Length: 232
Length: 385
Ligand SMILES: Nc1ncnc2c1ncn2[C@@H]1O[C@H](COP(=O)(O)OP(=O)(O)O)[C@@H](O)[C@H]1O
Ligand SMILES: [Mg+2]
Image (cartoon, rainbow over all chains, first blue to last red; front, side, top):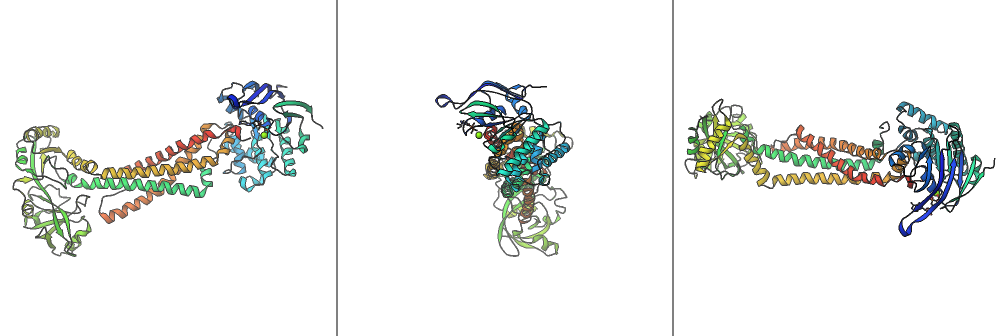
């Protein structure tokens, strides 16, 4: 298994709009992410970071170039294949995007329900375990509107990681949080990902959390301009 | 897939919206029950006399359109039918509306008078047990299931009181009771002898009948006799119409259903209930889906298929249908009881009708669901990052 990258991007271009309004957003993106690696992507707003994340996450179709995620080529892939692939990726959004009608535990469990091999009892137990791992054991029965911003984001992390995804994609997960809870959230994410061997691709503007990364990449004007080793 | 009943949890969360939806569906259910119930009651009551007459084949004038609008035909035709093989016996039947004066408050009202030969009755023992009184002149039997505007005749009679009143200007005595029931066409019924009937309706031409009742010999082939009667009477003379019992019932029913606006009005009323319900459920579901669009997009990003989200919307529609139907059914049953007591109309909550309205309710909700789910397609997982 050693060192087949979980994400292999080769000369990917992406355009929005059509006809005269067609505008290129991503230019010749090439990158690889190895299993278990934590990569932070930085770059100014509007540079195309989110767009790249949606391509990797099979939420948008790849138009040009090769995008291999977990060994699956996404360019020209059938929609029927994209949906199952999403189940092996954990997503953490800027907004927590929890389901408001469900308790914290049920929200986490929703990601396990997609895996038919997990029984309902097992799913319950795993969800409670996940919440314990993010420090919310006593909050399992609470609804999102009863939780603080940091707590909600921790539920979202529990949900993203519950099914042991090989890849976690996080788009500015700390943007809406204060300094301390932002730091907590990232540390929890790092710890869990390391335990489970999940690779993380994390978009952030937050300089204070760069130390969790194995590697930092920069996006500028749709080009992945530099790769460098993170300061330890 | 249903370990977490998302549909129910989402509905339950918005309590006010849920109540509005249920009130709307309940309203539609009640409206449909009222319309269908009254329509069936009208038709059932309109044909209860027809059903209760003991006879296999009926003769009426071709000009007759309903019991409330009968034309007469020569009674000769009825006796001619005795010559057709398979016919066992015949009874002449006279029908007409007369003015009854309520003996207690002196108010008058139209009542249906049914006249036949006491030796040759058209009803069986369960409806009228004793025909002896109507052999007396100017004596009638009173239908105790008539509307109460005719007066408390049943109670007075039970108290052994002699009830006499005025019927189309003649003094008549109530000689007994029977039970048939009011209909939309006739608020009450009287039975009397053919002789009394003709005395009452003195302007009638002699030898003219409203209905000829024909009974067949045991084992006679009804279809064959019907054909023979049609050939010998209907075809050759053209002054009678030959009907089977079902045909006679249908003759009356189709008058109310198609020759009056009644059937149309009731169907329209039910349709309005259905449409109102559909619109309300659609509104509720559409708002619900719109509110959850970001959540649905998140579920899609997590790897849930469109089908799952569609099923959530349809489950919501189905839950609404059930939860709106049950109170609607209970309320309508109460309403039927009230109506039955107030109007003597045979209006009952039948299994058939409750199933029909249930199916309509489910269809109503599912149709709304089918329009509202199109909104689910708008949930784009690429938009939520
Ligand atoms: N759905 C879309 N349609 C058209 N243009 C878009 C769409 N999404 C993003 N863009 C444009 O693409 C560029 C990159 O956006 P994005 O990937 O969100 O940047 P970042 O996440 O780095 O801030 C921006 O100029 C933005 O306006
Ligand atoms: Mg962005």
